[in-house]
Image 1: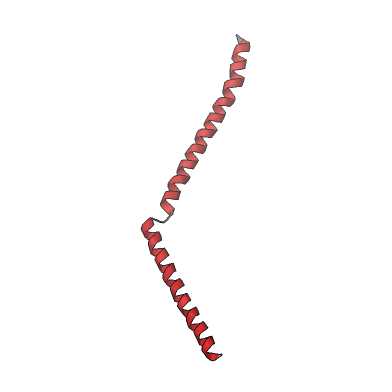
Image 2: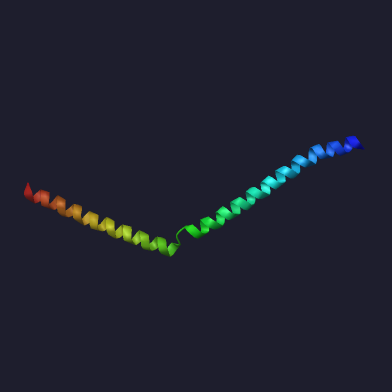
Length: 75
C-alpha cells in the first residue's frame, strides 16, 4: 500500500503542478488578449489615418511633379 501511494504521489504531483502552470499561462494570455483588443485601432480610426496618409502622398506627388516640370523648363 505504501508503495502504491508513493507511485501515485510521484505521478500525480508533477501532473498537478504542470496543470496549474498551464492554467496560469492561459490566464496570462487571456489578459494580454484583452489588452490587445483595447489598444488596437478600430476600422473607422484606421480609415481616417489612411485617408490622411493618402492626402500627404498626393501632396508629395504634386510637389514632385512641379519640381520635375520646373527642371524641364529650366533646361
